[in-house]
Length: 295
Image 1 (cartoon, rainbow, N blue to C red):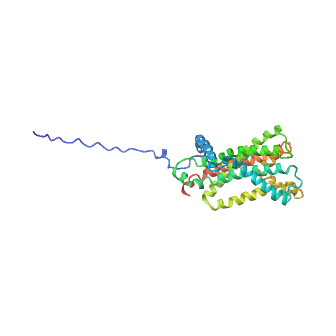
Image 2: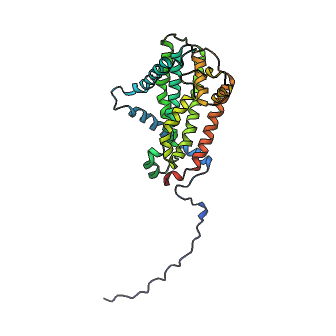
Image 3: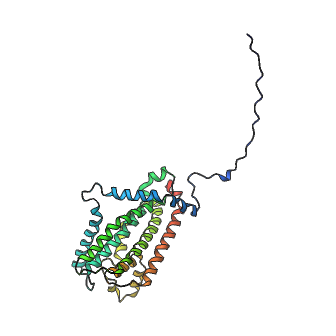
């Protein structure tokens, strides 16, 4: 049986294709700022679920569990009351010093925890940042949402202590004003946390200085003394009023202790600081988006 020899077909002509490289994007490239905000919104459900889950697991190994969220500021308040109220007599001239101190300690601890958690969110999650592609601002945002969730029992305990400890304060409609004050405080915490998160991701040494800076900030916020002791030094009082944490503490004290509507200057100052810190912090953090993988 003979096999017929057939000539193979001629090869197909190779056609040159033109590729539009302008439509391609480098992996991990920083998106436009508005696109970045849209990506953050798309991750909102994950951020909320992760924050809630971490709050639940944070004190799971402790026998008292979530009670430590309230016990820590109470013990801090007792320590400051003994040292500054009794030994150093900073309570002189302050009506209801216990309530005054409780509000200062609780409100400042909320800001301190939020700012420190947000500032360290990138450096503490370096493996996640380098392994996955996602908007990195979700980490400090999630850290601040966790601290906001933790602040719920904190605020409730603060209100109960103000009501129970003599001289007991009466509940008034002005107490509702602490809600917008805490909201503005949260926005300010997030803005500062975003700024520090980028700084610490580049200069890790700043993370070691952060507790000392927060302690100095607390001493300048009239947490355990009255700013009226500087009545003869108006320049010091003016400097203290430029402190956003002093403003939020003063607003809450006016509402809870003195049944006084906070001045519009205090609200305006706190709003400017909160919205300004948030806008600057978000833009500053976005500019360093690509550097978090390399550092």
